Image 1 (cartoon, rainbow over the protein chains, first blue to last red):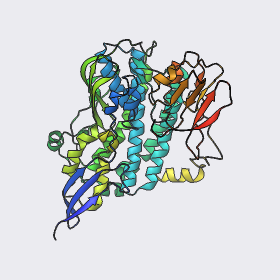
Image 2 (cartoon, chains in turn yellow, brown; image 1 turned 90 degrees about the vertical axis):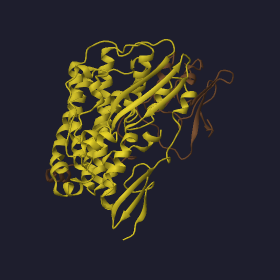
Image 3 (cartoon, chains in turn brown, red; image 1 turned 30 degrees about the vertical axis):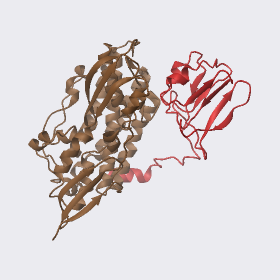
Image 4 (cartoon, each protein chain N blue to C red; image 1 turned 60 degrees about the horizontal axis):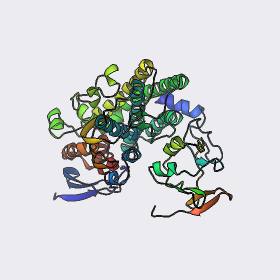
Length: 358
Length: 119
């Protein structure tokens, strides 16, 4: 049969955000996939010329709603490096707590969307029901549900009282139990395995060469996680990257499922080891110089390049998000797959398009 | 999963019938932004610090105006306010049919204003 080009997206029921793929298919088998972007570009980096470097925190939080706190944390870390500011230890632990809460709710959101992509709607609703507890924790501790806005240059703007910490631990115990109830459904179910095992296999070599990031990389057997850089309080926490060796869509699901438990454990450790003291230091002056800062987002490595010139406006702000790194692996894993598997495979890299385009 | 399904059958609804039943806000939540205009000195620090530039203050005309549709509820203005007259209610703002700003005048009662599209 001759080749046909099927346009996939930018509007598609499985896609939460617009991305376009030109799929060359032959007998329902994908032969080539060419991605195209540019549907949600908002020019947030350019805003650095209009908003001062303190106000830019609220802008970079809006690069991505789901990992807003981690974007702001990375940006603040960069400015703190430029301005030689040491964040108090308690502030660092609080940043770890909120960033891991963000990772949990991002993974829960993804697990739901992923289940929805292969047609398991009841699991989708169960995961989103669990996620609601994390949203409540965010609202009760930071003030907002999603874009928590707790970071400032020099630390965090809010503190956690002992009673709130206890409440968080109690809620996380519920989350953990409810996740365990869904474990066999998500990981051992016959239909789930039928849709995911062996689909979109990315070998270890291919993942490395194509520059995959985050769970997509770790599912291919490479133990690389930016939290190993021990930023903030991760040097004091027991942590080892979650690694799977399958390299397929199933392995990527398993990595994210297990990372949710890991993040719950990290929040517990952080609350147990958090010292007393200040949560922030007052920052004076203006930043100067350039810096590259990397953190681990739920989707993988996020990179910030900041160039400052000792004025209140930054010279240049460049953000590279993990989905940008995961697009070449996506284009490589699609050829050879059936057209019906394409939605599942696109979801398996956890695409965040507004992140990518900023 | 079977256990979950049975539990969901016997337990109540996981959601609320929203407009009829509203969950009370958490104590420190950043809900609707308000200003105790009687205590406000119209210094304008909130307007300068606001990342979304949703606050307009005029000392000459004695008013403080907020565009709740541009506000990102970050709480920067509340923390910056030297008079502590800005505050967030725990509950979020009610939905509205029309976009309008809130204008608080020192001498008059609060009124809704037309929000500029090109702020």
